[in-house]
Length: 371
Image (cartoon, rainbow, N blue to C red; front, side):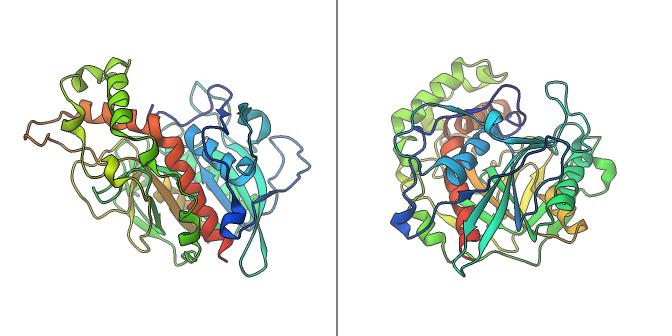
């Protein structure tokens, strides 16, 4: 599993509330987001009005979103809940997606978030089934964003979720917040758009004043990404059915370990202000081998920003580092082939993407609650 493959509802998605810590909102003087009851009239009905629409994408991200914004304050809950049954399907005027799924667009819920200024913000949470790197490609993603904006009429669009680290300073579980994204397209169905190489930047940026409080609730990845934990992840990856598992076989954890995923560096996840610094959006799975100047590496946001800008709507991207930079060579200068790097990156995402997404969802909450 990776950010590239974990993209559509293929079976009922379950979240385990006991896996993520319960959220004690009172410990930071905050109120939990409050679900808004809706008179749901089916997948072809219009969406409710909202001040903010927040998209997320993968199953790991969806589970974390559900936990932070809907069920995270429940103490002692241990049974899994099926998100596909709790969330509401929206597919009004949507095309069909890939063969393993039905019609696009996705699933939603509405919550109220109490702002510091006294206003309660209506936030439409949406698990998107439209993806830049999968059919119907950028046209489908653009169509989804515009369809949601047309119904909900939000002031801002958020895209949150997992991302690859763009430098070794971006540690597993960190969060990057930016209002800018650059598109890099290779898929033949996307390149005719003429958008490859273009950067889209919103004039708006959220208030980050509550981020220090939210960080007190972040999950330190050092709790699970221990030396033993990483050894276990690597061992499982070598035994997996991943296409590149054989290429990973010759390498030890010492060969793959760097500052971005060293357990000694994972005890205090940070949320970083990257205002004006683009993240890189690709339509293929891209893993950094050396430091770059991007805010993060992911697979949807710049296209979301383009579509939002076309609809004259502000946007921001809140991305958690779920798979870190993977070096191109070992400390002893032995080259690590691309397949081995991808297999390791995918294994790290699969093991830790849910917990890193928890941090990202909390950071997104903080930027809304501050206003």
